[in-house]
Length: 366
Image (cartoon, rainbow, N blue to C red; front, side, top):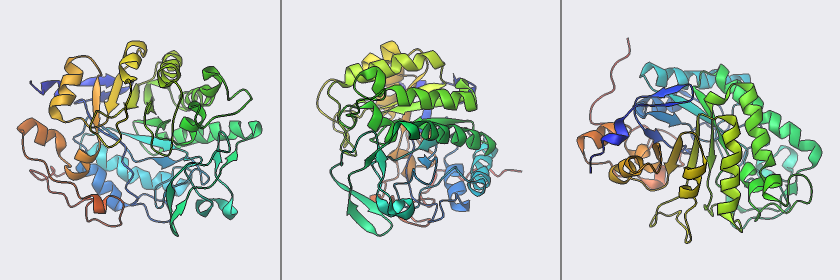
């Protein structure tokens, strides 16, 4: 089939996109131990500005939010100023870029926390697996359940991150409520066993997500805010007893904000993140009233088909954008794709980051 559907323009809230190919959020760990964006990161994002929209790597809303070595933050003035070189670089190439804002919750470790404190979560449930700390790979620990008194401060961290992103020149923010991080830990019943207003029923478990979304909307405006969910993703030892009920409720509740978009990670069969069982995305498509973005193993043909069949409005590509900075051009020309090098996904420096070749050089900005 024709892949022309991928190249149709679309408007997401206040953001006009020249095509429907989105660069998915991709943690790369290149910001250094100070968590400040740098010129190498600006070059990396500039190279990929032909995407209809770039969603940045997950970015911490506070020091406590950290759970991955050398990932950037958006909580200090120095970080805000450093992000401006990234947004400027993308905008000079005619691109659009939103900042994904993030709290890792229990998917952290005392090595990341002030004074070696335990990471926080909805409930004190230890995840299986290991985390990459600055001191090497270590087992996850049992987190501390967040107190009711702490929750408003966490919500305000997301609000302040939204204001900071606006100051840094981003076109919007994406709230990271997926992949087993803090908001997802409240949402799914495999990690939320609270007995208060934030636990038990679906309505209570979704409360934190909705409070964060409301705070972000109030800090900027709904037409600059997106949300990412991952209904069936088991990453970070996540599970839910009824993902269809949980996530269709969340999608319905998010309708009240009139958001710029909703982003779903639900991998296609055969993808490394795919799980058995019924897919949730078709149910959410029927319920969510705004633009829907999907992600998880799509290529040019399957992505275009998803748009043509009205399964979604946009398709986010992850690993293909790592290895192919000019992915839209390659899809348009049916050109061969560069092969990604997984050994350099999370290493330092330019190798495997900014050295993948493009079909043609970027235009020079006057």
